[in-house]
Image (cartoon, rainbow, N blue to C red; front, side, top):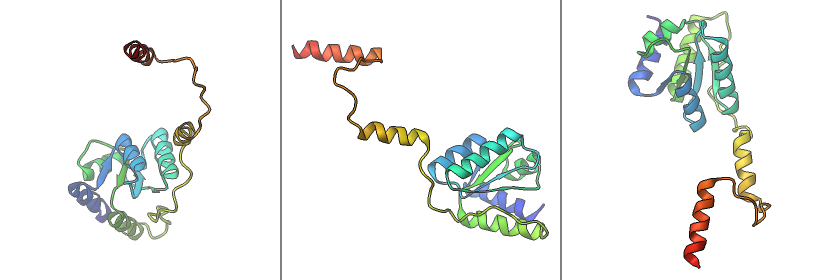
Amino acid sequence: MDRSLALLGMAKKAGRLAVGSQAVASAARRGEAALIITANDASEASVRRAKSNAEINAVGYTAVPYTMFELGRSAGRGSPGTVAFLDKGLADGFLERLAEKLPDKAVDGQTDRPDKPAANRRTKQRKTAENADTEPQNAPIQNRRMKRRLTKTKESDA
């Protein structure tokens, strides 16, 4: 077994590995992911999603020369196309061992997180909605449940 894949297995046993695109995306959103990696035979959609998660959440990203089967065997789960290290030390060790295996190729995953980029669109919308007092008091109520609650409280107050 390759030394970098052995480190992947150690990270899984330590509970410091997110396996699968959904687990990787949620770890990246929470700020726990240190490095996102994709298999060389992962689908284009998985690779695009992983790159997007890495870019939006300021996380390192690299594609590795392993198949989904090899990643899955090391991680102890099926055939994931995307895996994320949740520990910076393990991620750095993985990149070092990967660089030893591929001396002629530059490994582009950087685990030093720059300052997080501007928040995503949903967060911006939420913040502007919280700070803005632009909603008129007599705005129509969209939600039926909320409408019922308001009418019940008005009736009970009267």
